Image (tube, rainbow, N blue to C red):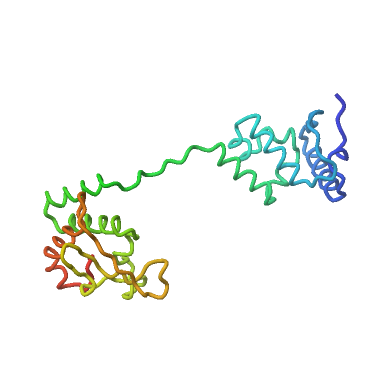
Length: 231
């Protein structure tokens, strides 16, 4: 098999000069350069990065080991001798990232919060009768039924991040008949701190109304030292 000329694979002078310079450097270093297979045709006038992009996609599909090939360049140098010179191009990097996602391991997500989880937290708080367990069950249950973020109920550990406009205070907690609720002073879709009224009704599993009533009764001692409800 005759070795094809590099001029058959690119017509851009800058590309040809880069290819020749790289091949001369490889030959001077004593490296053996393999020719491209005859049935692997490159479109005339194609730039260097798209050529490498096509080679990587072809190898990823045929060999099914793109994660190894694209990370180390193993076997690609036979098809594309100037792999290292072109892998930093954005198009090539995008192809590498896409191939890693296609050939990568499946994503294992944590299961969503369910009513059974809520009930287990409530049962534990009822059994231990500890303030921390009751606080945790309340903090998890209220956003679950109120459809807002859990982080909007608690204070950050870093004092520099604490904003009193976002804190739920004692005066914002209310009980009205068979309902309970509080004024949520801030959320991500409320940049002007207008606030949102959160109202809970009785539920069969993890009743937030009963939880807030129990928490308000048990938390009176702690509230004397803090003006926040969930602390």
